Amino acid sequence: MTTFEDRKDAYEAKFARDEELRFKATARRNRLLGVWAAEKLGRTGDDAQAYAREVVRSDVSEPGDQDVFRKIRADFDAAGVTCSDHQLRRTMDELLATAVEQIEKEG
View 1 (cartoon, rainbow, N blue to C red):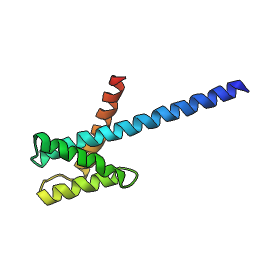
View 2 (view 1 turned 90 degrees about the vertical axis):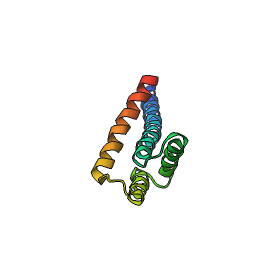
View 3 (view 1 turned 45 degrees about the horizontal axis):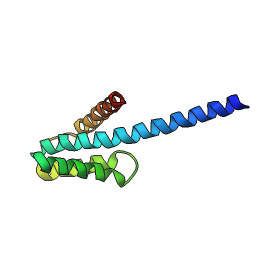
């Protein structure tokens, strides 16, 4: 019976690690995305960092990426920034991969 318990414990630990990585990667992706979007919006320095924090905070509204997408889309539209939905989503995907790589390198 201990073999099954050990296996169950190992799966639970792996699931917890995977969820923690997903959470950290998503938060980091949102920060990177905020910096990218801030640049497109012409924001620099502290203003760009503040905008990146706004993007990270916007992800608490609902599960998934739609709330972050809507925030940036609305900000781009209000500022007249040309960026297709496809390009924005592709950038989100690319930055998620970058965030995962960064986190894995850190340890």
